[in-house]
Length: 261
Length: 348
Image (tube, rainbow over all chains, first blue to last red; front, side, top):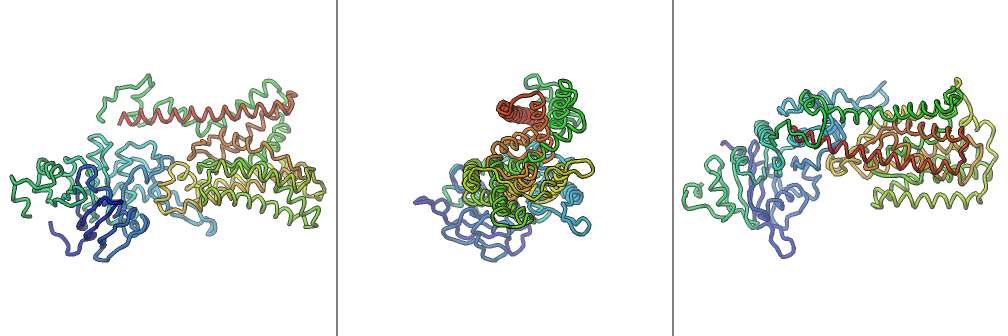
C-alpha cells in the first residue's frame, strides 16, 4: 500500500504504570489515513490501556502521541475528540429513547429561526442529512425517525460508527465492534469499515475474531504483556501465524519471510 | 444469530406480522397506549363518573374540574421534565407554600406593590429550583434526598415566616388570575394552555428538552456528545421551580390568601399526574401533554369524590392508591417493552 509520508497518528515509546505493574512498555504505533490497523493480544496484553490513552481516558507515564506530526497531550476524552480521535462504544454513545436522526445530531442540533426570532430545531433538515449520511455509508437503517430501541444490534453499531463519522473524526477506535453480532450483521459492520477506509479515515480495530481481522485490516499489531511483539502485514499473514504470535509472543521460524518485513 | 423466524418465545401472537415491517400487535397496543393512553384513560374516567353521576358532564362542571386541576397541571409540566431527566422533585408542594407566604409578607407587611410581590413569588420558587439543581447536578446528591430535604426546609420556613397563620389582604384585582374568566373559560385554564405551548417548544424543539430525554436514558452518551450535562440538569430544576412559581400565583389567587400548609400533598399529585401521563420514573420517557392529561384525570377523580360526598381524608387514600397503581402500570409497560425488544432482536 502507498502510504503518505506523515502518519496521522504516531505513538512513540508509550509507557504506562499501574502501581508497580508496567501495563505498557515502550509501545510504538503508526496509523496512516485510510488504513485499518488491527490491535491484537490476549486479555491483559495492554490493548485497552493503549486505546484508553489514545482516547484521553488515561495519561501515559512516558512517551508521546503525535497527531499529524504534532505532539499532543490528551488530558480528557474531550481533548482526544477535538483532535479527531473517536472511540466507538455502542452502549456509551446512543440514547435508546431518541430517534436515529436525534442521536446522530446529539449535541450539535441544527436550528432554524421561526419568524426570524424563535429558535427551533430544524427536524426536517436533520432527518434529511441523517438519511443522506446513512445512505452514503451504506448503512442499512431504513428510517431515521425510528427510535434506536427499535434497531438491531448491528444497526446500532453502524449508527454509533456513523455518529463518529459525522462528528468529523479522523481516527476511529473500534473495540470489539462485532462481539455481540450475528453473521449477517457482522458482515454489514465489516462492509462499513471498508467504506470508511475509502473515506480516508484511519481505524484501529480491536477484536478477538481473527477471521474479521484478516478480512478487514491492513496491518496487525500484536501486544503481549504490555510490549509490541509483532507487526505484520495482514495480506502476508494467516490465522495460524497470528494465533501463534498472540500466544507465544514470537514469530514462528517456520515462516522466516514474515519477520524480515 | 441466524435464528429460525418461526421460533416463537412463549406464546407471542402475530409474530410473522413483523416481517411485513410492522410490530407485533400487542406491542402496537402498548405503543398506542404510550401516546394515547392517558387520553383514553381520561375518557374512561369521565364516562364512568358520568354514568354514576350524569350531572358531571355539564360544561360548567367540566370547567370546574379544569379549574381545580390547573395548579396540578402546571406543576406536572415541570415535574414531567424532571422525571424525564431521570430525577424527581418532591419539593414542589411546600415550595409553593413558601413562595406565596414570602409574597404575602412582602405585599402585606413590607408594603411592596402586588406586581413586585408576584415577581418575588416566582423568584423564590426559582431560587428553590436553583438550589435543588445545584445540589443535584454539581454536588451529586441524589435528587430524591435533595428535594426531600428541600420539602422540609420550605415547609419549615413557610410556617416560621407566616407564624402558622393564613395571610390575607391581596388587592381585589389579584383574584382575577385564579378566579377570573376570559371568553367564558377560567383564566387558570388559559394559563395552562399557554404553558403547554411553551412546553411543546421546550420539550421538542430546544436542547433542554432533548437533552433531558437523553440524560434520562443514557447520561454518558449525552456527556460524550459534548453536552454540559450538569448545566442541563440545573436548568431542568429551574424549569420546575418556574412552574412552582406560576402554580403558587394561581393557587394563592384562587384562595385569595397565602396559606403555609396548603402546598402539602401537591408533590404527590404532580408525580401521579406525570406518571399517569406516561412518564417513567426510570427516566427518559414522558410527555408534558400526558402530564396535563394526568392532572385532568386526577382532578376528575377528586371532583367525583366530592360529588359523591367522600370526605377529604379518604380522598388522600384514593390519591395514594392511584399513584401506586400508576407506577405499577409503568412497571408493566417497561417489562412489556423489554420483552418485545427481545423478541425483535431474536427475529433479526
